Amino acid sequence: MTVRDVRIYPDPVLKRRAAGVATIDGAARSLATDLVDTMRANERCVGLAANQIGELRRCIVVDVTGHAKARSCAGLIVLFDPVVVRSSGSAVAREGCLSIPEFTANVRRAADVTVRGLTPDGSAREIAADAFEARALLHEIDHLDGILFLDRVTSVATDVFPRKRG
Ligand SMILES: [Zn+2]
Image 1: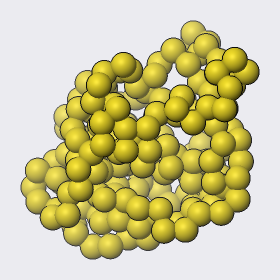
Image 2 (image 1 turned 180 degrees about the horizontal axis):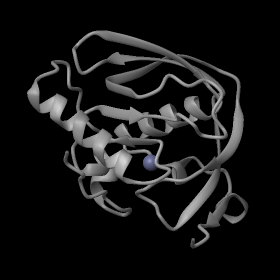
Image 3 (image 1 turned 180 degrees about the vertical axis):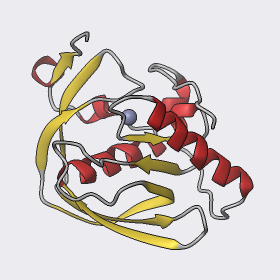
Image 4 (image 1 turned 90 degrees about the vertical axis):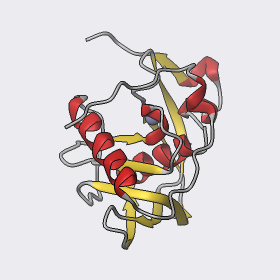
């Protein structure tokens, strides 16, 4: 089990585009394992992208199991080279990010999505998700393109909030 350090904004790796994985080799599988371990080690973390541990390879993990805001729930999702193949609807909801610990923000995203990618065993997986799970998938795929949730905020004046200290 390897819990990696999470890169914090404005670390430049967070603004870079990750490269496609294409072949799922041992290095790719170990990257996915580290992402899952790092997600699990951070309480309330529901997703992580490879950029956030300093790796510019297209891999995301998402798990919204047990989250109050979740409707669809596919359990643990580990995807390489994820792409959004269908999206519809629109919703605004609050988001946070381990890489931006100081703020949360209201972000508009598609409400329903279908995402396709490769699993650690190299097979194709397609996931239809809505609500919180759809949002988590879109947030993580954005990371792979160097896009942070703050980049999607309509108004910094009204839609960004300092995170309350626990
Ligand atoms: Zn994030």
